[in-house]
Image (cartoon, rainbow, N blue to C red; front, top):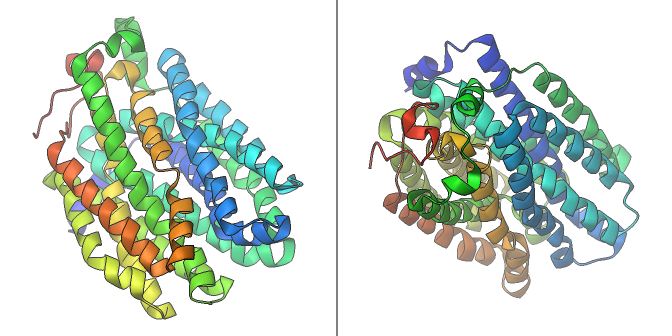
Length: 419
Protein backbone atom coordinates (compact mmCIF):
# COMPACT_ATOMS: atom_id res chain seq x y z
CA UNK A 1 0.00 0.00 0.00
CA UNK A 2 2.63 2.54 1.05
CA UNK A 3 4.85 1.56 -1.89
CA UNK A 4 2.14 2.76 -4.29
CA UNK A 5 2.03 6.12 -2.54
CA UNK A 6 5.83 6.45 -2.44
CA UNK A 7 6.16 5.55 -6.10
CA UNK A 8 3.78 8.32 -7.18
CA UNK A 9 5.12 10.88 -4.71
CA UNK A 10 8.68 10.84 -6.08
CA UNK A 11 10.35 12.34 -9.07
CA UNK A 12 8.81 15.77 -9.65
CA UNK A 13 10.91 18.56 -11.11
CA UNK A 14 11.32 21.88 -9.29
CA UNK A 15 8.82 23.58 -11.57
CA UNK A 16 6.29 20.78 -11.06
CA UNK A 17 6.71 20.98 -7.29
CA UNK A 18 6.31 24.77 -7.33
CA UNK A 19 3.18 24.54 -9.47
CA UNK A 20 1.67 21.99 -7.13
CA UNK A 21 2.63 24.01 -4.04
CA UNK A 22 1.13 27.18 -5.52
CA UNK A 23 -2.17 25.43 -6.31
CA UNK A 24 -2.17 23.69 -2.92
CA UNK A 25 -1.56 26.85 -0.90
CA UNK A 26 -4.11 28.82 -2.87
CA UNK A 27 -6.79 26.20 -2.25
CA UNK A 28 -5.72 25.91 1.40
CA UNK A 29 -6.14 29.63 1.99
CA UNK A 30 -9.50 29.61 0.22
CA UNK A 31 -10.73 26.85 2.51
CA UNK A 32 -9.17 28.55 5.56
CA UNK A 33 -11.27 31.66 5.03
CA UNK A 34 -14.42 29.72 4.12
CA UNK A 35 -14.29 27.58 7.25
CA UNK A 36 -13.66 30.54 9.51
CA UNK A 37 -17.34 31.33 8.94
CA UNK A 38 -18.34 27.72 9.67
CA UNK A 39 -16.41 27.76 12.96
CA UNK A 40 -17.62 31.13 14.24
CA UNK A 41 -21.02 31.75 12.68
CA UNK A 42 -22.76 31.11 16.02
CA UNK A 43 -20.51 33.75 17.62
CA UNK A 44 -21.18 36.21 14.77
CA UNK A 45 -24.92 35.50 15.14
CA UNK A 46 -24.73 36.56 18.78
CA UNK A 47 -22.89 39.79 17.89
CA UNK A 48 -25.26 40.74 15.07
CA UNK A 49 -28.40 39.41 16.81
CA UNK A 50 -29.54 37.12 14.01
CA UNK A 51 -30.63 33.48 14.04
CA UNK A 52 -28.37 30.56 13.20
CA UNK A 53 -30.54 29.75 10.18
CA UNK A 54 -30.04 33.30 8.89
CA UNK A 55 -26.30 33.10 9.59
CA UNK A 56 -26.08 29.89 7.59
CA UNK A 57 -26.80 31.94 4.47
CA UNK A 58 -23.28 33.37 4.74
CA UNK A 59 -21.96 30.05 3.48
CA UNK A 60 -24.75 29.90 0.91
CA UNK A 61 -23.73 33.33 -0.38
CA UNK A 62 -20.16 32.16 -0.91
CA UNK A 63 -21.21 28.97 -2.65
CA UNK A 64 -23.70 30.78 -4.90
CA UNK A 65 -21.03 33.14 -6.27
CA UNK A 66 -18.37 30.52 -6.88
CA UNK A 67 -19.66 29.59 -10.38
CA UNK A 68 -19.29 33.24 -11.45
CA UNK A 69 -15.65 33.24 -10.31
CA UNK A 70 -14.98 29.95 -12.09
CA UNK A 71 -16.59 31.31 -15.25
CA UNK A 72 -14.72 34.64 -15.33
CA UNK A 73 -11.30 33.42 -14.26
CA UNK A 74 -11.64 30.19 -16.27
CA UNK A 75 -12.27 32.04 -19.53
CA UNK A 76 -9.37 34.36 -18.78
CA UNK A 77 -7.04 31.43 -18.03
CA UNK A 78 -7.92 29.62 -21.24
CA UNK A 79 -7.29 32.77 -23.25
CA UNK A 80 -4.21 34.21 -21.53
CA UNK A 81 -2.67 31.37 -19.51
CA UNK A 82 -2.99 30.04 -15.97
CA UNK A 83 -0.37 32.03 -14.06
CA UNK A 84 -1.53 35.68 -14.11
CA UNK A 85 -5.24 34.97 -13.49
CA UNK A 86 -4.27 32.85 -10.49
CA UNK A 87 -2.17 35.66 -9.03
CA UNK A 88 -4.93 38.22 -9.52
CA UNK A 89 -7.43 35.84 -7.98
CA UNK A 90 -5.43 35.31 -4.78
CA UNK A 91 -4.99 39.07 -4.30
CA UNK A 92 -8.71 39.60 -4.78
CA UNK A 93 -9.91 37.00 -2.31
CA UNK A 94 -7.23 37.97 0.24
CA UNK A 95 -8.38 41.59 0.32
CA UNK A 96 -12.06 40.65 0.55
CA UNK A 97 -11.41 38.11 3.31
CA UNK A 98 -9.45 40.71 5.27
CA UNK A 99 -12.27 43.24 4.87
CA UNK A 100 -14.67 40.80 6.60
CA UNK A 101 -12.90 41.65 9.87
CA UNK A 102 -14.36 45.15 9.71
CA UNK A 103 -17.96 44.35 8.73
CA UNK A 104 -20.24 46.54 10.89
CA UNK A 105 -23.34 44.38 10.49
CA UNK A 106 -24.77 41.23 8.95
CA UNK A 107 -25.76 42.87 5.65
CA UNK A 108 -22.24 44.13 4.94
CA UNK A 109 -20.72 40.79 5.90
CA UNK A 110 -23.17 39.02 3.56
CA UNK A 111 -22.08 41.23 0.65
CA UNK A 112 -18.40 40.57 1.42
CA UNK A 113 -19.03 36.82 1.49
CA UNK A 114 -20.75 37.12 -1.91
CA UNK A 115 -17.62 38.82 -3.28
CA UNK A 116 -15.38 36.27 -1.58
CA UNK A 117 -17.25 33.51 -3.39
CA UNK A 118 -16.09 34.95 -6.73
CA UNK A 119 -12.45 34.60 -5.69
CA UNK A 120 -12.96 31.17 -4.18
CA UNK A 121 -14.72 30.01 -7.35
CA UNK A 122 -11.82 31.07 -9.54
CA UNK A 123 -9.15 29.40 -7.45
CA UNK A 124 -9.90 25.70 -7.70
CA UNK A 125 -10.31 25.27 -11.45
CA UNK A 126 -7.23 27.30 -12.35
CA UNK A 127 -5.05 25.72 -9.68
CA UNK A 128 -6.16 22.22 -10.63
CA UNK A 129 -5.56 22.89 -14.32
CA UNK A 130 -2.06 24.26 -13.72
CA UNK A 131 -1.04 21.48 -11.34
CA UNK A 132 -2.53 18.58 -13.31
CA UNK A 133 -1.08 19.86 -16.60
CA UNK A 134 2.40 19.83 -15.06
CA UNK A 135 2.20 16.55 -13.08
CA UNK A 136 3.20 13.39 -15.05
CA UNK A 137 0.11 11.31 -15.99
CA UNK A 138 1.13 8.23 -13.99
CA UNK A 139 1.47 10.33 -10.80
CA UNK A 140 -1.75 12.34 -11.09
CA UNK A 141 -3.73 10.20 -8.65
CA UNK A 142 -1.53 10.87 -5.62
CA UNK A 143 -0.97 14.55 -6.38
CA UNK A 144 -4.66 15.02 -7.15
CA UNK A 145 -5.45 13.70 -3.67
CA UNK A 146 -2.78 15.90 -2.13
CA UNK A 147 -4.14 18.96 -3.94
CA UNK A 148 -7.71 18.34 -2.83
CA UNK A 149 -6.32 17.79 0.67
CA UNK A 150 -5.47 21.49 0.72
CA UNK A 151 -9.16 22.06 1.42
CA UNK A 152 -8.95 19.96 4.58
CA UNK A 153 -5.62 21.52 5.55
CA UNK A 154 -7.24 24.95 5.28
CA UNK A 155 -10.04 23.75 7.57
CA UNK A 156 -7.45 22.39 10.01
CA UNK A 157 -5.55 25.70 9.98
CA UNK A 158 -8.80 27.56 10.61
CA UNK A 159 -9.46 25.29 13.60
CA UNK A 160 -5.97 25.87 15.03
CA UNK A 161 -6.25 29.62 14.43
CA UNK A 162 -9.57 29.57 16.29
CA UNK A 163 -7.92 28.00 19.33
CA UNK A 164 -5.12 30.55 19.50
CA UNK A 165 -6.56 33.75 18.03
CA UNK A 166 -10.28 33.81 18.76
CA UNK A 167 -10.00 33.85 22.60
CA UNK A 168 -7.96 37.09 22.49
CA UNK A 169 -9.10 38.81 19.30
CA UNK A 170 -12.52 37.33 18.59
CA UNK A 171 -13.91 36.36 15.21
CA UNK A 172 -12.75 39.64 13.66
CA UNK A 173 -9.15 38.82 14.52
CA UNK A 174 -9.45 35.53 12.66
CA UNK A 175 -10.48 37.28 9.45
CA UNK A 176 -7.74 39.89 9.82
CA UNK A 177 -5.15 37.12 10.20
CA UNK A 178 -6.29 35.44 6.98
CA UNK A 179 -4.41 38.06 4.93
CA UNK A 180 -0.99 36.81 6.08
CA UNK A 181 -0.99 33.20 4.80
CA UNK A 182 -2.71 34.29 1.58
CA UNK A 183 0.21 36.63 0.85
CA UNK A 184 2.58 33.71 1.36
CA UNK A 185 0.59 31.73 -1.23
CA UNK A 186 0.85 34.69 -3.62
CA UNK A 187 4.63 34.83 -3.21
CA UNK A 188 4.98 31.13 -4.01
CA UNK A 189 2.67 31.47 -7.00
CA UNK A 190 4.82 34.26 -8.45
CA UNK A 191 7.67 31.73 -8.80
CA UNK A 192 5.72 29.28 -10.98
CA UNK A 193 6.18 29.02 -14.75
CA UNK A 194 3.29 28.99 -17.21
CA UNK A 195 1.62 25.69 -18.18
CA UNK A 196 3.50 24.15 -21.12
CA UNK A 197 0.30 22.36 -22.19
CA UNK A 198 -1.53 25.70 -22.45
CA UNK A 199 1.38 27.31 -24.33
CA UNK A 200 1.55 24.44 -26.81
CA UNK A 201 -2.19 24.42 -27.34
CA UNK A 202 -2.26 28.21 -27.83
CA UNK A 203 0.24 27.85 -30.66
CA UNK A 204 -1.51 24.96 -32.37
CA UNK A 205 -5.18 25.93 -32.25
CA UNK A 206 -7.40 28.99 -32.25
CA UNK A 207 -10.47 27.11 -31.05
CA UNK A 208 -12.74 29.17 -28.81
CA UNK A 209 -14.68 27.76 -25.82
CA UNK A 210 -18.02 28.33 -27.56
CA UNK A 211 -16.86 26.29 -30.53
CA UNK A 212 -15.71 23.44 -28.28
CA UNK A 213 -19.14 23.27 -26.65
CA UNK A 214 -20.75 22.59 -30.00
CA UNK A 215 -19.46 19.04 -29.65
CA UNK A 216 -22.42 17.09 -28.14
CA UNK A 217 -20.01 14.80 -26.23
CA UNK A 218 -18.57 17.80 -24.38
CA UNK A 219 -22.00 19.25 -23.66
CA UNK A 220 -23.44 15.98 -22.35
CA UNK A 221 -20.37 15.42 -20.22
CA UNK A 222 -20.62 18.96 -18.87
CA UNK A 223 -24.18 18.33 -17.64
CA UNK A 224 -23.17 14.99 -16.15
CA UNK A 225 -20.19 16.50 -14.31
CA UNK A 226 -22.37 19.26 -12.86
CA UNK A 227 -24.67 16.58 -11.44
CA UNK A 228 -21.69 14.61 -10.13
CA UNK A 229 -20.21 17.71 -8.48
CA UNK A 230 -23.59 18.53 -6.94
CA UNK A 231 -23.58 15.14 -5.24
CA UNK A 232 -19.96 15.55 -4.18
CA UNK A 233 -20.54 18.99 -2.71
CA UNK A 234 -23.62 17.84 -0.84
CA UNK A 235 -21.50 14.99 0.51
CA UNK A 236 -18.64 17.17 1.75
CA UNK A 237 -20.66 20.15 3.02
CA UNK A 238 -23.23 17.81 4.53
CA UNK A 239 -20.59 16.08 6.64
CA UNK A 240 -18.58 19.20 7.56
CA UNK A 241 -20.41 22.51 7.71
CA UNK A 242 -22.93 21.82 10.46
CA UNK A 243 -20.72 19.49 12.50
CA UNK A 244 -19.02 22.06 14.80
CA UNK A 245 -22.42 23.57 15.62
CA UNK A 246 -23.84 20.07 16.19
CA UNK A 247 -21.11 19.43 18.75
CA UNK A 248 -21.52 22.83 20.46
CA UNK A 249 -25.26 23.52 20.27
CA UNK A 250 -26.65 20.03 19.77
CA UNK A 251 -24.55 18.19 22.36
CA UNK A 252 -23.64 21.10 24.64
CA UNK A 253 -19.88 20.61 24.37
CA UNK A 254 -17.39 23.45 24.55
CA UNK A 255 -16.12 25.36 21.54
CA UNK A 256 -12.60 24.04 22.21
CA UNK A 257 -13.88 20.46 22.16
CA UNK A 258 -15.57 21.02 18.81
CA UNK A 259 -12.37 22.49 17.42
CA UNK A 260 -10.24 19.56 18.59
CA UNK A 261 -12.73 17.18 16.94
CA UNK A 262 -12.51 19.26 13.75
CA UNK A 263 -8.71 18.97 13.81
CA UNK A 264 -8.98 15.18 14.19
CA UNK A 265 -11.40 14.68 11.31
CA UNK A 266 -9.39 16.95 9.03
CA UNK A 267 -6.35 14.78 9.68
CA UNK A 268 -8.48 11.87 8.46
CA UNK A 269 -9.40 13.89 5.37
CA UNK A 270 -5.77 14.71 4.63
CA UNK A 271 -4.88 11.01 4.82
CA UNK A 272 -7.81 9.85 2.70
CA UNK A 273 -7.22 12.15 -0.29
CA UNK A 274 -3.67 11.20 -1.28
CA UNK A 275 -4.06 7.56 -0.20
CA UNK A 276 -7.14 6.83 -2.29
CA UNK A 277 -5.97 9.22 -4.99
CA UNK A 278 -2.84 7.10 -5.39
CA UNK A 279 -4.86 3.90 -5.53
CA UNK A 280 -7.13 5.37 -8.19
CA UNK A 281 -4.21 4.87 -10.58
CA UNK A 282 -4.75 1.12 -10.10
CA UNK A 283 -8.45 0.87 -9.32
CA UNK A 284 -9.68 3.63 -11.63
CA UNK A 285 -11.18 6.98 -10.67
CA UNK A 286 -14.82 5.90 -10.55
CA UNK A 287 -14.27 2.63 -8.73
CA UNK A 288 -12.22 4.39 -6.06
CA UNK A 289 -15.02 6.93 -5.51
CA UNK A 290 -17.65 4.18 -5.20
CA UNK A 291 -15.58 2.22 -2.67
CA UNK A 292 -14.97 5.34 -0.56
CA UNK A 293 -18.62 6.44 -0.62
CA UNK A 294 -19.86 2.92 0.20
CA UNK A 295 -17.53 2.84 3.22
CA UNK A 296 -18.94 6.23 4.24
CA UNK A 297 -22.49 4.79 4.21
CA UNK A 298 -21.41 2.25 6.82
CA UNK A 299 -20.00 5.01 9.03
CA UNK A 300 -23.09 7.28 8.98
CA UNK A 301 -24.90 5.81 12.04
CA UNK A 302 -21.81 6.11 14.22
CA UNK A 303 -21.08 9.56 12.77
CA UNK A 304 -24.57 10.95 13.43
CA UNK A 305 -25.50 9.19 16.69
CA UNK A 306 -22.30 9.39 18.76
CA UNK A 307 -22.61 11.50 21.91
CA UNK A 308 -19.16 11.43 23.53
CA UNK A 309 -16.10 13.36 22.41
CA UNK A 310 -14.06 10.22 21.79
CA UNK A 311 -16.63 8.56 19.55
CA UNK A 312 -17.38 11.84 17.77
CA UNK A 313 -13.70 12.28 16.95
CA UNK A 314 -13.30 8.65 15.84
CA UNK A 315 -16.44 8.50 13.69
CA UNK A 316 -15.83 11.89 12.06
CA UNK A 317 -12.22 10.87 11.35
CA UNK A 318 -13.50 7.78 9.52
CA UNK A 319 -16.17 9.76 7.70
CA UNK A 320 -13.75 12.36 6.37
CA UNK A 321 -11.25 9.66 5.45
CA UNK A 322 -13.97 8.27 3.18
CA UNK A 323 -15.45 11.55 1.93
CA UNK A 324 -12.18 13.26 1.15
CA UNK A 325 -10.76 9.99 -0.11
CA UNK A 326 -13.48 10.11 -2.77
CA UNK A 327 -12.75 13.79 -3.39
CA UNK A 328 -9.06 13.04 -3.84
CA UNK A 329 -9.55 11.80 -7.40
CA UNK A 330 -11.56 14.83 -8.54
CA UNK A 331 -8.81 17.28 -9.65
CA UNK A 332 -7.32 14.57 -11.88
CA UNK A 333 -10.69 13.15 -12.95
CA UNK A 334 -12.20 16.45 -14.11
CA UNK A 335 -8.96 17.61 -15.73
CA UNK A 336 -8.67 14.35 -17.67
CA UNK A 337 -12.22 14.70 -18.98
CA UNK A 338 -11.55 18.26 -20.23
CA UNK A 339 -10.28 19.32 -23.67
CA UNK A 340 -7.08 21.39 -23.59
CA UNK A 341 -8.85 24.43 -25.02
CA UNK A 342 -11.19 24.80 -22.03
CA UNK A 343 -9.34 23.13 -19.14
CA UNK A 344 -9.21 26.39 -17.19
CA UNK A 345 -12.98 26.75 -17.59
CA UNK A 346 -14.47 23.23 -17.75
CA UNK A 347 -13.42 21.61 -14.43
CA UNK A 348 -13.88 24.75 -12.35
CA UNK A 349 -17.30 25.67 -13.71
CA UNK A 350 -18.70 22.13 -13.39
CA UNK A 351 -17.33 21.97 -9.83
CA UNK A 352 -18.77 25.34 -8.86
CA UNK A 353 -22.15 24.85 -10.52
CA UNK A 354 -22.40 21.72 -8.39
CA UNK A 355 -21.63 23.92 -5.40
CA UNK A 356 -24.37 26.33 -6.47
CA UNK A 357 -27.00 23.60 -6.46
CA UNK A 358 -25.67 22.35 -3.11
CA UNK A 359 -25.54 25.84 -1.60
CA UNK A 360 -28.67 25.37 0.52
CA UNK A 361 -27.20 22.40 2.37
CA UNK A 362 -26.39 24.21 5.63
CA UNK A 363 -29.70 26.10 5.94
CA UNK A 364 -31.55 22.85 5.23
CA UNK A 365 -29.56 21.01 7.90
CA UNK A 366 -30.13 23.82 10.43
CA UNK A 367 -33.86 23.83 9.65
CA UNK A 368 -34.06 20.04 10.07
CA UNK A 369 -32.11 20.30 13.33
CA UNK A 370 -34.53 22.94 14.60
CA UNK A 371 -37.59 20.83 13.84
CA UNK A 372 -36.11 17.45 14.77
CA UNK A 373 -32.51 17.14 15.98
CA UNK A 374 -28.95 17.40 14.66
CA UNK A 375 -28.52 13.59 14.44
CA UNK A 376 -31.73 13.37 12.42
CA UNK A 377 -30.59 16.20 10.16
CA UNK A 378 -27.30 14.41 9.50
CA UNK A 379 -28.95 11.07 8.82
CA UNK A 380 -31.53 12.56 6.44
CA UNK A 381 -28.96 14.46 4.40
CA UNK A 382 -25.79 12.36 4.42
CA UNK A 383 -27.24 8.93 3.56
CA UNK A 384 -28.91 10.04 0.30
CA UNK A 385 -25.95 12.05 -0.94
CA UNK A 386 -23.49 9.19 -0.44
CA UNK A 387 -25.86 6.92 -2.36
CA UNK A 388 -26.15 9.52 -5.12
CA UNK A 389 -22.36 9.76 -5.43
CA UNK A 390 -22.16 5.98 -5.88
CA UNK A 391 -24.89 5.88 -8.55
CA UNK A 392 -23.56 8.82 -10.58
CA UNK A 393 -20.01 7.49 -10.46
CA UNK A 394 -21.19 4.08 -11.62
CA UNK A 395 -22.83 5.44 -14.77
CA UNK A 396 -20.04 7.87 -15.74
CA UNK A 397 -16.87 7.71 -17.79
CA UNK A 398 -13.20 8.38 -17.04
CA UNK A 399 -10.00 9.04 -18.96
CA UNK A 400 -7.39 7.99 -16.42
CA UNK A 401 -3.81 8.56 -17.52
CA UNK A 402 -4.59 10.39 -20.76
CA UNK A 403 -1.77 12.63 -22.04
CA UNK A 404 -2.64 16.32 -22.23
CA UNK A 405 -1.65 18.39 -25.25
CA UNK A 406 -2.27 15.61 -27.76
CA UNK A 407 -4.75 15.22 -30.59
CA UNK A 408 -7.06 13.33 -28.19
CA UNK A 409 -7.43 16.32 -25.85
CA UNK A 410 -6.73 19.38 -28.00
CA UNK A 411 -10.17 20.27 -29.31
CA UNK A 412 -12.68 17.78 -27.98
CA UNK A 413 -13.50 15.77 -24.88
CA UNK A 414 -11.14 12.80 -24.49
CA UNK A 415 -12.69 9.43 -25.11
CA UNK A 416 -13.11 7.16 -22.11
CA UNK A 417 -10.12 4.90 -21.60
CA UNK A 418 -11.55 2.75 -18.84
CA UNK A 419 -15.27 2.72 -19.53
